[in-house]
Image (tube, rainbow, N blue to C red; front, side, top):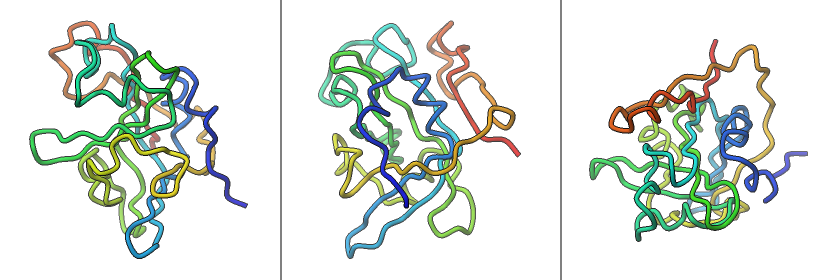
Length: 177
């Protein structure tokens, strides 16, 4: 039996959640009732108000408000005015932290949706899901299959060179091979 991840999964530390998202199944119920599913292959953590690469580093705004909520909701934003990005909010209310989903198996099984914009297009995620509960009915994660450490790689995050020393932190997790 497939089980949804419970709230306690999201209420943990951001780096722990980021690593544990690998192998979990992202699920999206689309209009008409079909459910799109794909195994998460890459995730990138943004941890707290001191993280200079995080949207929360300058304090709360209308855009980043979901990051300041308790873990277990989606933070969806538009980047470059073109691509939506899906983040999993983690930790306690008031501590702004989230994990960007950067890659997953494509729901149609044809290929991997590598890159946050491709992932959101494949799963039909847009700003309408910003702040949505990750406990369903429109967006949730299922247990999936755990990924052994031997095939997990940690690297610095992508596209955050402006963040100084924070850009070099190995907060990106991916399945290799």
